[in-house]
Length: 105
Length: 203
Image 1 (cartoon, one colour):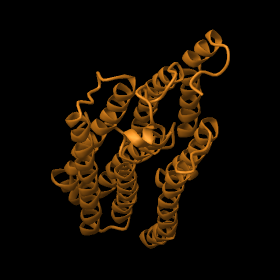
Image 2 (image 1 turned 135 degrees about the vertical axis):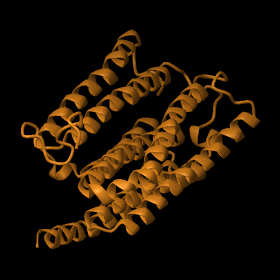
Image 3 (image 1 turned 180 degrees about the vertical axis):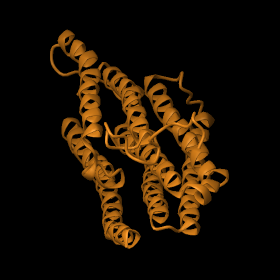
């Protein structure tokens, strides 16, 4: 009985996996397509990072089952995200202070 | 089971609510985020400090091979779903199906590396080494480290496909958990590429 219930549970998820797979392929096509539009650099970076974040969210939520995970993993990830933001922001903030205006644009 | 065996590898730990192996892999992935994060931060720092990117002029999409990068992105995405299907096959009690999907995952990982080999060879052929300029230094370090992670995934997945699968006969639940953990790592490697591809090739 329990095994049958587990089978049903997994087969329900199968559809989800295929939908995410197709969505990821489509979003990849969109990212590449948008790059041919030659948008201004800040806009291009924003669009590309938004699409990449959606893709990463789909992989994490569905393939890595984060959508139905235990609290302890969320705690680990929140802490990781916090330190990741600090790691990314700190060195770059020092640069922005030294330059007037946004470099590299 | 011997007394030295790691406890709670199958049953959830009463404190965390998950098996120890799963907590372990997530902590490892957290450290991986910091490793790639440090390099990504360096990339942003170097790039924003340059008047032109790539330094030699033109666009990243003209210097790197976008069709090959796109193909490799699709290959990795496909390998992620075959990995999920390998785990789902274990959950549904089918070792032959697990072997089929895990075999496909390893094959796709090898395809990714072969494509990368051709990309690297082309760059070396034109004498574009990591020492050429900051663009190539960043490109080779980030894709090289990611490539090493692919190699690591191939080793673990091949073990689970071959000698490691003997555990299916003695402790299928534990084996399924191992496949799940290998899968978490593999999806992370895919996730890193999802950010690397547009940042390096398209922007």
